[in-house]
Image 1: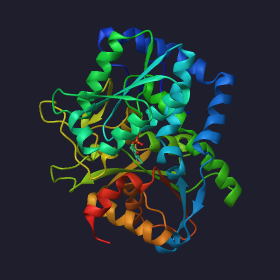
Image 2: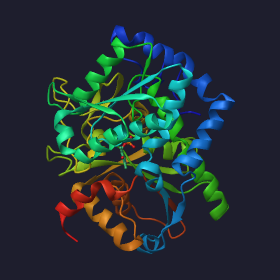
Image 3: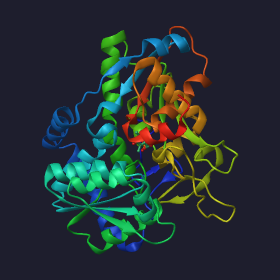
Length: 393
Ligand SMILES: *Cc1c(COP(=O)(O)O)cnc(C)c1O
């Protein structure tokens, strides 16, 4: 396991736990206990039973025949879009709520931008009868009404963040503040492979069920657990980390991460972190992030809310740095066209995030017998308004 995190929480130059002194006890409790808890037999049993009966795992590995013909390779879709709540995010929230219970916590907090992680968190809190508060920027609450109402229906309290630009980073600050003030009874569920150690590693482990299943399914389908390529989109990077995880040490598997180029990498309206970013500290870890000359975080832009993030998880910063993962990007236009293409050719309307992974296919020339897996991170139901506004269908 060449690419796993070290004792101190670093992936090469990236990672660590850059946190205020006041958060140290909370993070330290997690750091010292997470591995023992999640690899305990009873935990694994409960986790996998819920993934099976509640989330609907294993998700299918679907041979997309018409897409395969078009791109001249054998293309499989890993159907995370069929998970309960519509995306991969629930794999992680199930894992973290079971962990929170074993740590003796009674309350859950989370922050959310577009609301997808908030909904996945509200869902598992309802399931476990835990009290849940989700912080969300006031502007985001106005933009994402349906997800706010979903969380409320599920019994969660949604608290507007009223400071700064009233978006994700302000919600994150509010959640941190809450956690500092309520360290003993509250667990903070982070939604991607970001944040201070051990969060990136913990989230990657929960999401690694994706590549664990892929290997088994490929073995059954083609008699070989290794594909030639795995494609995934990257916001913070949790679905990509999960889809790559069990292939990281198999260098003959080409791993491709697709970032959101927005209106173009050099347009000033983009979220193509590795193309534009530099090392810096964001949300408690050292990573690559988009920033100005004097280190201010640059406001990212993408048509897809889930990829609209100025950094990437430290594991991806490292995989980019050492060249293990190939980073590419797709513009809004390219992603929307790829989303429509999948809808027309396979009868699957993808989340616009996932459409960025599909859009990367056309940037490669495949050999006829190449086996390609695209991680379809989520379904497009939540994006209907965006498809309608786009209108080109
Ligand atoms: C949130 C989300 C993403 C981006 O998050 P990652 O942590 O990068 O996976 C991608 N796809 C969908 C469908 C999402 O909801």
